[in-house]
Length: 258
Image 1 (tube, one colour):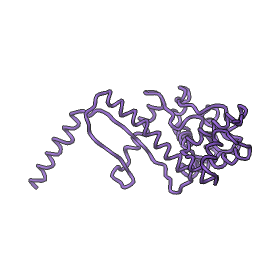
Image 2 (cartoon, rainbow, N blue to C red):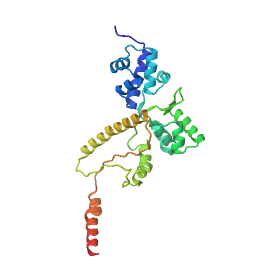
Image 3 (tube, helix red, strand yellow):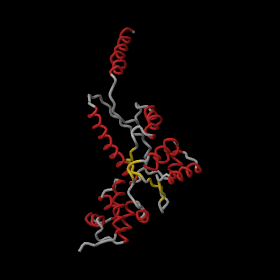
Image 4 (cartoon, one colour):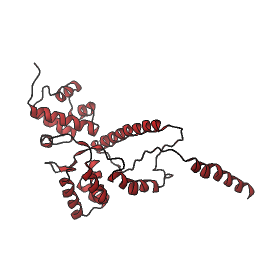
């Protein structure tokens, strides 16, 4: 007969499966880490033949503490509240702290990678906890209470802050450098077509977050903070005329006469 577990174990297993998905860990990865057969791992993940020791081994293989899974009372949220957006938009340092934690950063990362002084960092962490954006697990790890793919409001406080600060920063970088990878094209699309492209961007972002989670879980060296920006917008014909048609012709004419 199938083994039955109480609601507490079911809650732990559900949280553990979310961790697997969020970190991009596959069953084959667990097979390697645990040293047991794949059918056995799959049975354990379904709660079959699961003892406390085996559950603890599963958690260790995923890289989480079982007590943290027990303490978690709900799934990560998928969107900000308006008040949370307003606070983050008003304090860039606080926003940087949160979004770094959202992507797995811990205290050492925030101090070493971003140069936060300890006192300022601790103040930011306390404030983020009061806002309900992060939590500290029993093992001392920082964890965001929102999904990595969290969305903010169109035209809202964070969207405005992004337009004013982050997007210009990304565009100010040298796209011609070997470290800058990008794809570009020019197509004719209706507003509906551009909306479909935006939906593709959303799906691709999830894939990018999956890759980041896999590399974090594997503890790979050489991981640098990397900016990602996907954008589509209609061209103004005047822009293309001035920059390409007339501008290009003027340069060619000038070169021919020199």
